[in-house]
Picture 1 (cartoon, rainbow, N blue to C red):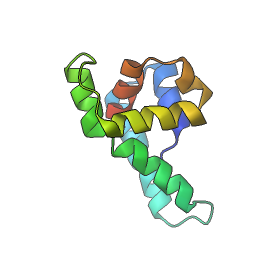
Picture 2 (cartoon, one colour):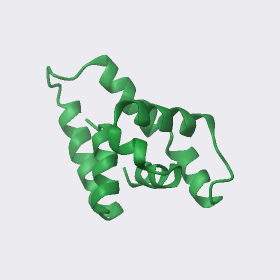
Picture 3 (cartoon, rainbow, N blue to C red):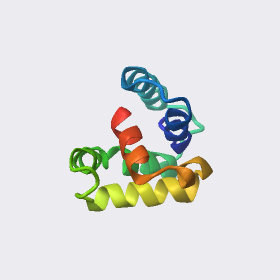
Picture 4 (cartoon, one colour):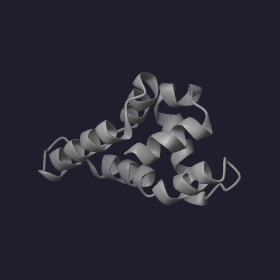
Length: 100
């Protein structure tokens, strides 16, 4: 299960994308195993962030000039649910989304 705290951890510790991808895959595997703690809202929240990957790639590649609707939704969601994301720039969050 991927959580907004993962994004903050990526920003705080500046871990490599390979490590982030590995962690995200492990987390995703744990959530797909069917734990009773997972909820529909958590799945929806994760989906908002993961669906923003293409928009995040465009944003990073264009040096912030291309801002897609899915990226905007993910940035808003992350900042509403995570204090660490509130301090991060849009570019830092977009790069963290790409590292998932």
